[in-house]
Amino acid sequence: MDNFSKNIKSMFDSICGRYDFMNHLLSGGLDIYWRKNIVKYSLLNYAKIFSDCDAGKRLKIADIASGTGDVIKEVISFINKNGGLIKNKQIDIFCADFSLPMVKIAKRKLDEIILHKKGLIRINYVICDAQNSCFKDSSIDMVFIAFGIRNFSNIDKFLSGELKRIMNKRRSMAAILEFNNIFNYRIFAFFQIYYNYFIALLAKIFSKNITAYKYLVDSIKRLASDEEILKMFTDSGFKIFNYGKIFPFIVTRYIAIINNS
Image 1 (tube, one colour):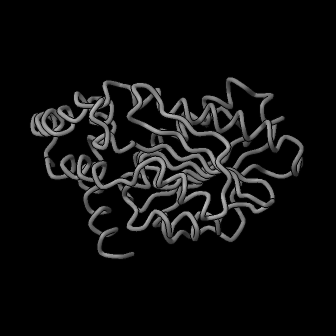
Image 2 (tube, rainbow, N blue to C red):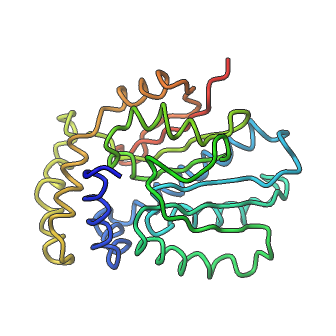
Image 3 (cartoon, helix red, strand yellow):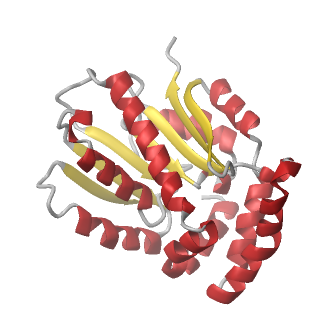
């Protein structure tokens, strides 16, 4: 783990206790809708493309840079409501993050949800750096990353290297949810004011770690544009299957498959 990642890990360790609360507060609850959106689009598209592949095998889903497990929570909820979608496949879900305190919170949250699933869904909790993970080559069918890639030291290298390495080369999909760099667009002046002033104010009132939320804003400002990230995907050998900005258009959904053509 490089020094940049070590500093990010230390920061997330320190804010884990109020992480969910601050996410909901700062987004006005929209973060819940954003996660539901990417889970819905990715699972529907996965079922549409790969419905007849390896019918008897367990489906392996990894949420890397998982934080407190809210994406996995939405995955389980969506599967419960759409049972026929994956034709009663058994599912292994990996909750992977480099912050042990975050993963502990995720475990408490998710263990309560799957008590009644009787083995259909198994959750595995993994402590690892997303940029140098412990997953085997070509082992994961679906990869979720929500609000994580802006914390990676090199997004381009991650897409072409580690992400592609762990994805099943025959039938897999990557679903990435991330803020877009609204500071490039004058039309989003309101959000620029919100990011630059109100987030700092709310962090000062409700969080003990103002620096962490200053980093949030700075990381969005440093983030590559949507067009640049799309090019990183295609240059890394992926095909973008679904792309779109999610209301109020400050968050972007990227759903990609490995381009085997």
